[in-house]
Amino acid sequence: MEIVLDPPRGVGPLRLGMTADEARAALQTLGRLTPTAHGELAMHLPSGLGFSVGFGVGPTHGRVNAIEVWRPGERDLVRYHDVDVFGLPAAAVVTRLRRHVDLVANEDDDGFTARGLYLALWRPFAADDDPDEEQGYFFQSVFVARPGYDDTPAEAAARLAAGDEPGY
Image: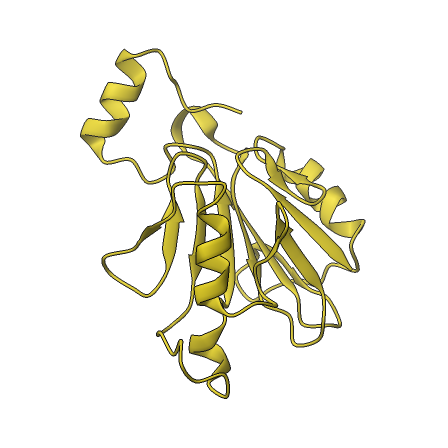
């Protein structure tokens, strides 16, 4: 299966701004949904590729405001532009994505984020020189959210004052 990342619009059939019912229907186009322990909207395909959907609060209440995709156990293709974000080593992904977006290393983990689009890549630790250490050599998840998803209160106030309200 091929899933295309389309920040800041969505991931595959999932779109930021969808209602819960719309997101559920979109996920069902990929496979069978199974209930989770906490009732969140999430699924794993037989290949291991996983999806999780987050919903907004405040002005975006009840609408999809974040989508996370987890690295598959088998070979599914998840790409942004021409970059296979789970199939290439993390260092190569960063190099190639920087041709398209302003991707910055996170201060608190070994991930990278393009805040203008809100595209974030994560791995639990860096192991760029050890391909046998898959969890650190490859990214383990990718996250797409509405721009402003992680704004500080001051950034959110500035966004609202500029008329750039969080939206879809």
